[in-house]
Image 1 (tube, helix red, strand yellow):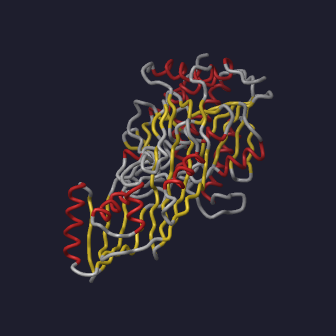
Image 2 (spheres, helix red, strand yellow):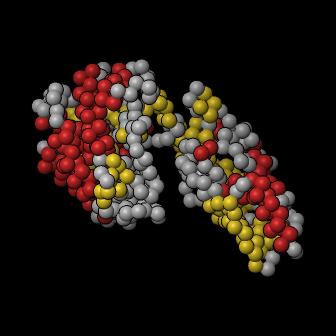
Image 3 (cartoon, helix red, strand yellow):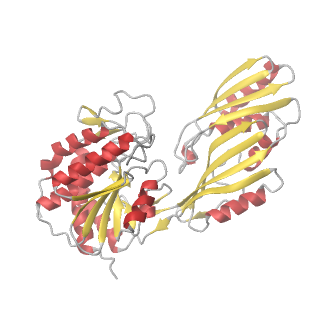
Length: 463
């Protein structure tokens, strides 16, 4: 089947600009827009585009929607999302302008996941134009709440039921055949201060699944705050950790600067809260929270001192502290874990409870999202791998199991397939200056067109 991929380039660029210019962060609900007006408008725009291109479309109460072609009992789906994370600061160009500079489009969502969503639409459009026979129903599902809870998927499944198989273009190439279990765990305590240095407060982190990049501490010393400040600076200098220390009377304000990273890869960051507590413990602050945190969490990200460490062929457990709060002698720690397949969330929580049994704390499992593994040598994964190789000629990159989570874990026989390429220019996903080199759109389109043909003709999940 011969397809002129370049034919769709300008249209993809124009439509991507159109939807990037609609701000789709989570916002106040409106009628038929549970995730805010921006998400409602963007979903309606995309479904209208699909209508014009010849799809049948359905809006599922503003939670999500889909465009469909073909017929049959089986449903093959490409699952995308239109919502984005907040823009943050530090952009060279306005984050919702979709400005093109030197053939690079800048804007929140260019990669995650509006760019891939547009490519998915034109993948099926290109096959329609080439008179490809769709032997199954083919759906492109557009969610509006992937970044903040995936309530859109829950609504889809309640209204439409499961798909037969498919992929989400919200990960990496060549193909993701497994995702680890992800959980959120809280540890809450009632603490005591003893000694000449009193811990007043800690304010660090907002999200379970992000390494804390800045932590603020307030301590109170009985006398000679300058001596304490000098000792603290010496500890931070030894650790090579950036800090700001100021004092007013006997109160010392400490700001610790770390390095942000995704909670799935905490070893790539520097946890400001953990380093701050480590420093207070070295300072011999006799506070029950400082003491147990330093003993059982410390600077670790693998849960060894919490006795929940596990490892398998896909790697070690990742234990990320994403939130630390302390006020009025009440402590709160929010932990995000990515689990090997030889353990589960209940085992991890049980281990933490046993380890901390002599501390005045309560450990609770707040969220548990089960991972999955598909056969990497099976026909579905191999069809995707071969499609990727056929287009890119990259035979070195291998299928992966990841610690991240995508829509794939919510659907039957669904995996992550792109859109990030091993050789992509820097994308800055979730950061300032998120950007897409426009020539990559054509590569993605060709990979997905080749892959969808293989997946529809070579893979069958019917019983």
